[in-house]
Structure formats: structure tokens, C-alpha cells
Length: 351
Picture 1 (spheres, rainbow, N blue to C red):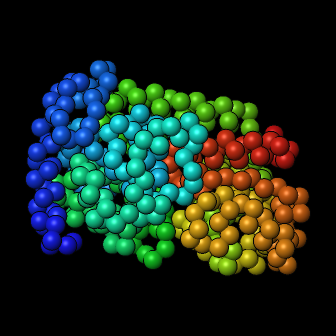
Picture 2: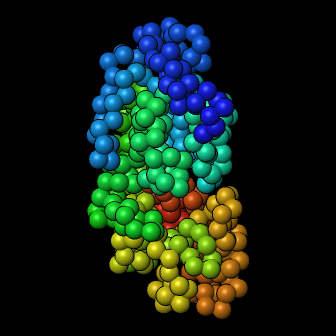
Picture 3: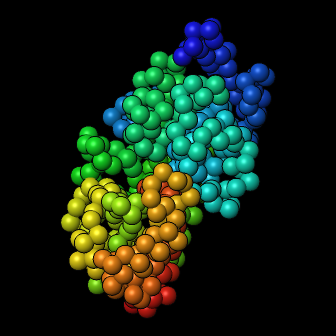
């Protein structure tokens, strides 16, 4: 940080102290750049303590200047109607869902990928949430300790730490299969932090209802599915137990790479062709950090590559296009359940 900015950490800490004592109810101190909460969700001011990914997080006051450092965190906050309490988002894989577009437009996007720590601090945040351990670590935005030094509590999605080992060089290894209960738990945590528990339960009920509707009467036993996230040179395919595992389990199908607990192992095309899945679930990404990001690029590759063009799913064009975000463990995983279920029914593979 530049010493010519009065020592940014010192200035920032002063601003936090100035904005900390929020008035309860609908009236807030002017100068903190916030708007009032609705009456039914008014801040109690009692503070919240969470056990989060091995750390005890204390949020003294209901956040009014929150930053969501990953798309998953942002979409939960937006789904809870918290856009008036957000001052920035970052690290986007796909466009926001249409029903959240209007709310999202009110929140500044700090960066399409990881915003710099300095840019995040420039928003004067009082809370930061992230979906991935990497985001709140070296190489991402900044380690959690750097935020905490400035009095900014941080929250990390349990879906990236509960039953998962992130100690290696890849995307981590699942020691326990992920379930939607972890996603619902994240919603409850954030709803508590923002004192909007009723909204949180309403959102969870809606997601559960969507899953129930999508899976009603479906039986995809005996159907082999492969999930390709990105990269045509050394493709990232889903292992057994992350978000794609949730989709597969809900539908009763089988992931052709259910013999690996790595989150996103890189697999050669000869091995993929040998597994010969019935259906290909293809990540449709709008970012541009890997080769073959969009579904269209992936399909062109599959149909022209001599190793893959003879695969059953390719010859029968059994493709399910899915946003990359739906392949991450977030509320969008429910989109994955719906879209893959619809695809299996369309292909006549679901009994």
C-alpha cells in the first residue's frame, strides 16, 4: 500500500470506527453510505458469532458495506435482497441470473476476476464473504488475517472447507461428499449475519421445492454422466463428490469419474473416451481464462477431435449446457439439478 495515502490501514480503521455504532431499526448514521433495513428484518445490534471453516468469526454489527469476493457469495446476498448493503463484488464466471440482474446492477463490480486488496479496501467494507479458500488466501484477494487486522470480519463458504482438503496444488480433494445441506447452511449463516433469517428460510424453502419438482419421478440409474468444466488441452472433469456429485446423486445417475475424490481432476481425452459416458454436461462459461470456455467451443472440439468424436454422447449429441457457476457448490447447483434432469428426460434416459 502506498504510504502517501495517510497509511491506508490506519485511515480505513478510523472510518470503520466512525461507522460502527449503527442505530437500531430504520434509522442509520449519515456518512456511512447505507440505507435502512426493512422493518421486519431490522438490525438487532446484538452481534453474531460463527464457527466458520476452523475460525471463530465475530460480526459485531449488521453489515452495511459488504463485499462479495466470489460470484457464489454475491448471488446468495442478492437472493436475500441485500443489494442495498453491498458495496462491491468480484470474480465472476457467468452472467448473473435474470431474476437478480436488476439488484446486481446496483452493486459495483470491482473486477471480473480477483479484485486487488487495495480496491476492496477502497469500498470501506465492514464485511467480506468468499466462496473459495483461494480467494481469501495468498494469490487471491488477501488472506483472512489481512482483513481481520483492519477489523473486517470475513466469511468463507463451508462448501469449500467442510469435508474438503485444500492443501494440495489443485482444486482440493473431498474427504466427504458435498450435500445441499451445506449450501443451505451457508444461506442460514449469511442470513444471521445480516439479520434477515426469515428471508433465508424462505430462500431455502424455494430451493428445496425446485429440487423436489425437478427430481419428482425421475430414475436415472444406469446412466453415466461426465461433467466438463473447462480447458480442452488438459480438461477439468468433475470428481465424485463436489457440486456435480450433488446433481448426480439427486438424479440417481453415475458420474464416470466417481472413482476420484479430487474436485476437478485434469484427465486426458483417451481416458475420457474410454469411459464413454451416455451424457456430457458441458460448462458454458463467459470468462476467458482457459481454452474452450463456452459450450459452443467445447462442442466444436468434441465433434472434431479424433479421440472424442466417436464417443456415444457426442455421436448422439447428448449435451446438457450448464453455466460454470452451476457446477460450483452454490445456490446455482439447484439449476444444475433442474437442467440435467430436463436433459435426461429429453434424451429418453430417465425412467
